[in-house]
Image (spheres, rainbow, N blue to C red):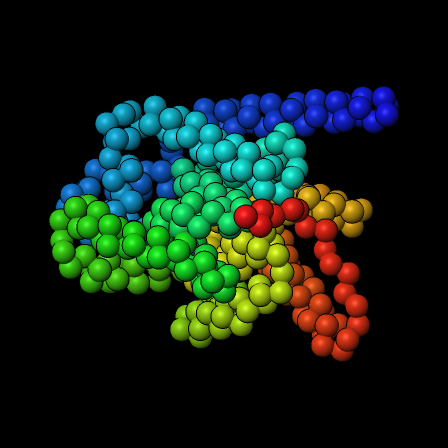
Length: 372
């Protein structure tokens, strides 16, 4: 027994050392960027226009307008100071997500933290000033609550996630599939509150109309300029010349056809795969959104074998190739996202086929879930 204890101690120490190195990388990167990321400046601009319709007509804030209130305190700080505070909050939220993941998947906290901070899309989010770590924390909170059958917490997490409706929508459908009506009711009850907050943020009771016009204009411009960073099915179809309406329709169709496959898996697996489905089929998803693939990786880490270890290792090695997206007109992060999405679909279809033909299917060794 003693050698095993020593190996475990050494492994934990190595993981903690890796976390320290990644944090040093984040700090050095933050010092180098100092708030110059394009998206960070856009969010600050939104903070300056809170309370006015200019939030939509000038700042082009593409999230639920009520979420712009979060940026209001940051505009009172110098550019770099606000950014460093933001980085600290993002690291804290990513660490919180890792802690919840350790409780959900039964993996060690140091391993979950290292996997979270070392995943290159987290670095992308930090350097651009993006907020995907916020979505990650809320996503993992929802997964934790679904696994533990805490309907109230699940509903609250998704209610807050409605600041990015694209990320919340898959969970709303999952609540229906799992028949978590209380969770769905809690999340839906937040919609009027988001509407009122958005009225205050825009100064316009009819804000959905100018928001829709602004979003459509921004979407066409953004996909034309930065479409090479797409890691989603519609985005990649757009890049190869498929008309926007057809590309988005295909993404929506794949999404709706995939969701029923969640019926045959555990609650933990269903909740962990839903964010990956959402990214793959979303009308708009760039590299930093791949942060939401982490639950699928944490799930894989809880069921590790030699093949999964190699696959996860390769995924982490491929991710930094994102920096060449502009040169090669393709974002390498699409490989693990769409590849993982396709692999999961194939496994589910195989399991269904074996069940239909009467052959035995060995159940996966998923983490224990609360049945209370």
